Amino acid sequence: MRIVGLTGGIASGKSTVSNLFKANDIPVVDADVIARNVLKKGSGGWKRVVAAFGEEILLPNREVDRPKLGQMVFSSDSKRQLLNKLMAPYISTGIFWEILKQWAKGAKVIVVDIPLLFEAKMDKWTKPIVVVWVSQETQLNRLMERDGLSEEDARNRVMAQMSLDLKRSKADIVIDNNGCLDELHQQFDKVLSEIRRPLTWTEFWRSRQGAFSVIGLVTSGIFVCKTLN
Ligand SMILES: CC(C)(COP(=O)(O)OP(=O)(O)OC[C@H]1O[C@@H](n2cnc3c(N)ncnc32)[C@H](O)[C@@H]1O)[C@@H](O)C(=O)NCCC(=O)NCCS
Ligand SMILES: Nc1ncnc2c1ncn2[C@@H]1O[C@H](COP(=O)(O)OP(=O)(O)OP(=O)(O)O)[C@@H](O)[C@H]1O
Image (cartoon, rainbow, N blue to C red; front, side, top):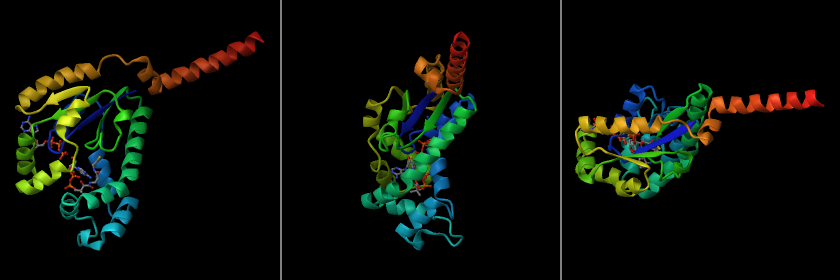
């Protein structure tokens, strides 16, 4: 199985690109969705986060007040690191199970959309790595517009992540998303044909079909040996 890593910065356009993959029948595992489930009321992650940050981060219905927690962690490195430490094991386990589900379904190529792919050192599990890049000016403008944030809050969020220029230098494939959506679509078509190229042998052995081939070969080998003896 080919596990394509999709990453970028906050509001650089990862979800826009992952929607294009989904529209082309490529399954996408979304770390933000998994992270949201980890913070659902009553879950293990919720209990640890509430124990560490206090009940003041809860809404009257006892769900986490996400904008409030976001305000806290994006303006304090130590609080953000604490939140990351508490949630990381749940998020990585969630990603692992979602990949396993796709493997069991026989998917040959999947995309994992992980905003913090490099920061969380998960890049070693994915190949190729696609980085959705924008200039910092475009990033701030799109973030302020989408989330209705002040410039200061938007900057705090951008600064909480590894710089997009550094991420770009670590990428196998770069999508430059500074332009309009039509330009994005044109680049996406090239990326799609790149990631749909035939699997390498290593990727094939990692797929469900490859694993079954190994089992088939070993079983027939044992059968042949027994017959010859
Ligand atoms: C702080 C929280 C509650 C704010 O929620 P909110 O709904 O406002 O934002 P949302 O979850 O949609 O995240 C939006 C974007 O923020 C960025 N971001 C989220 N968490 C972090 C973080 N810990 N460090 C840096 N950037 C982050 C990502 O680019 C993400 O795509 C939430 O982001 C969270 O639980 N973060 C910790 C979990 C995590 O690390 N998520 C990233 C998945 S790898
Ligand atoms: N090429 C583009 N032209 C104009 N607007 C765009 C373009 N690409 C994305 N956008 C807009 O920019 C905003 C950010 O995009 P998107 O939500 O896909 O980013 P993201 O990287 O998934 O963000 P996050 O890290 O917060 O999940 C959205 O409002 C989206 O509609």
